[in-house]
Length: 622
Image 1 (cartoon, rainbow, N blue to C red):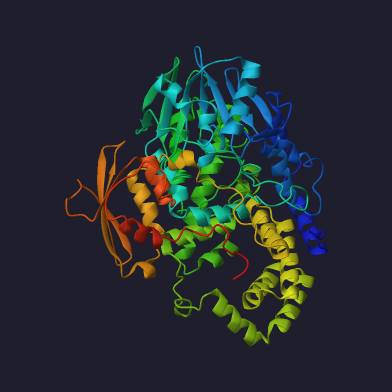
Image 2 (cartoon, one colour; image 1 turned 90 degrees about the vertical axis):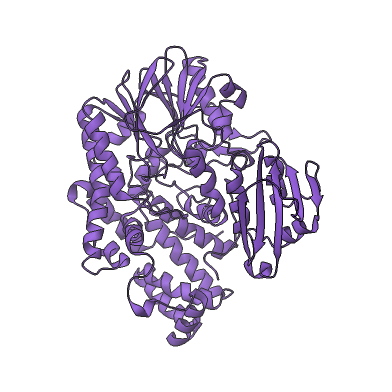
């Protein structure tokens, strides 16, 4: 694929960044190197079939000064995040960084070790565990703690412990509701989220100065097998304590922050505070670009205040599930205070401007951070951004409609694009206008024009070529890692075609943890309503391994379930295990393991109106 260099406009923009931000402050580089012990001999981690699921060496190009094609602030962050290996935080507390999107921590007890957040994939988690043990000895795992419900904090668990070990006493400690949120997040809108996540993390991009350089929070996601184990202990209350392997742990609940189920905790022995993912070295997302429920910055800032008040007087090190730690009590109080002020300021000022009549896009353009936040490297928008976080706050409080009646019932994108292009004088004229904007460095307007043009004629070579060039320059200029990945992914698909969903998180190990109710909900979402309008179906399902029975109906295109014992008059009764139900929902009618009584045609009719999601739907094309 032919790629362009950075334009003069982007080069000038980068020069302004270099002049504006405190690049002379290199304390983060010292912090990233602090306590380094060693790394993998072979940086490529492979699955059982020999396929590479993570290769830290693909980011070795991140050295020296930033090239013209990468925002220098993002380049700095990527260099910091790419450092990989085992690190001593304090004696007895260790971290593996740079072997997946997240960080895996090890807290040594009297005889074993507590593992915190075992990455995305069991392969990367196993490699991290082996690296820790090579340098710290073969300590048994006493417990695994998942700080919250996102996959990069639990997916690798079966790479380090088995269900048999859990049954024998290894604890799995989670915040209340973690499993429910963990298994549901990528199910209900999972196909759409997965497709967009491919853009967000640059999964199909080549790694290099003109491609993927990182996502700000971590470099990217590993592609191994994601797993999950049921918890043995749910933490429910702030102030709750629990002792594992001689180590006392004090917990603080923080639901509704970076994840719907999240917690912080403190180890008095080490004076070490784990802040999960609520105080990292970047402005985080209030709404991820892949899609999610909007997070609450007001609650987020309040939980940070609570952590400062409760743990701040004693903590000597703060570590999180991403990035590097912060050492020293004064430094911790400054770090947590600025992080708290960051989310609180965005929340309060956005609402102030909402009440002055500004719309989300207007607020995003006009809001300014205080100098102390603007100059703090850990408050920069490498993963979240001020722009899209402000729009998320607007969405949280005001919804999609900005109150202008002209925008209450617009045409959908393709029909709107056709009318815009016609009004502007046709596709050729739109290309001329877009080229002029491109040449002047107004890539945002060029992208808007070309978005309309490509939705009018998706095969037009000049439109696609200039649109790709435009998105490429926007990517080169982006300080935010996920913005860069989105822009460059769009350019890639315009030039090379749809790359689908490179990384799938709905792994069998996670699907197995779905409750029956979640399975039926997931099934209901796939019913093609219009095709099912005329169907009136009823059947019973007994899950023999759970001793639970459900009655299901499909009427008016809606699948409804209630838990009750089977009725004699129901047309169909299925008896099977939950794993067999998962396979059945996936279309497997023929394998053994299903006891059928009654009219199997009922089941065939149901399966006949299911319409699974499309993991290769278009994003930059209609």
